[in-house]
Length: 463
Image 1 (cartoon, rainbow, N blue to C red):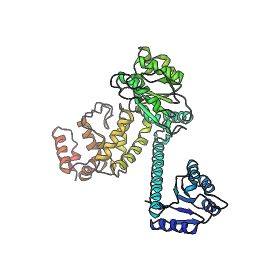
Image 2 (image 1 turned 180 degrees about the horizontal axis):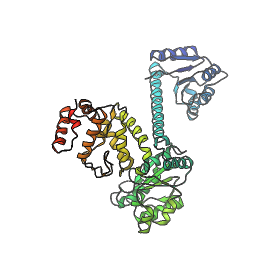
Image 3 (image 1 turned 30 degrees about the vertical axis):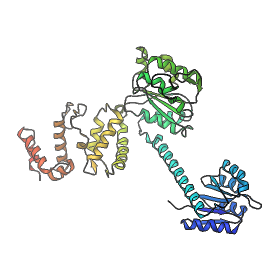
Image 4 (image 1 turned 120 degrees about the horizontal axis):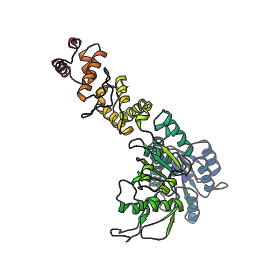
């Protein structure tokens, strides 16, 4: 337990000394004040984690000390000491923000004091940890962690800043892996709703028969298996944000019920006709062409217009390749930390390779490849070979030495070997080290290329 600063306030010398001795024996420094006015001056000029104050004191009471502490030191805990006959006043102090109170009776002794102090410090540590976690979450979803410098992404950032603190419904469209959920979370954690729930519902993952109950909840006995009343996700998200992920997968019947909720701001649990009012911001996402879904009769046009108050379209990675270097740098840092690695960066050739890919899996696919490279690399700089998975066809990669775009894995491997040999002046030892293979393996590869007539004699003269 880290060091804590404590202030003891009591006009009785014997009581002050008992408290001070007990706290110092626990290993904590203790400051003292013999009346409320002195305590208030100390509170205004010092930082305390815990203030233990007598309630009844001449001139300035413990209640005044409490009120000052709540203003000057809002994170500090205040414990009230009270005689048996003034417990009602102590309870009132707790209502005004005191952590707890101790009664000066026959049971009041050093053990009771020590137990209370430990309880307070455990509470303060937990409070600090919760605040830290909230700050971490908030940091994780800041706009500057949605990586991009392309024109399209900068426009999205401008939109997010403009709408984050409103309650307007947002409809996010984009292919799988583009970061729709990340944008939704960023909106929530940068809004005034950030301390309220963020509830996600994947409309594609839940069976149609369970979706209504999941969204709106149900009463006990509403259907077979409903053995208890259950809160739905709308109710759970009250005051916060509800993300309806892949909303285009929602059934037409449920779309109609959702439309009513959006219009009326209320819903009914399954098995109950009593309406429940909620204050929920809706963010919906889809990876489909929603207008095409409307044409085919699979999505209600009126629901679309109700959801599409603020539209955001996240472009696929192949349309924002300018962002790839930033994303790679971000993911290297992320997975260095996650896997205790020390990758310094990525080579020019490797970055060129990544820039040539079409990325059908978008940012998620790029992240997966970078994570694998960080884990598997034995070098500090990532090279092209670290991003090649077994079974890759690389149809979208342009050949280094020709305009042929139909590149097989074997051909890509050969090009990497030749390119690395050239970069290191035909030094086989250095080439093998960079490629993460043995010199013997490299030699065998070169002999294979020679037998097939694919090798320039220059490459057989290396050291």
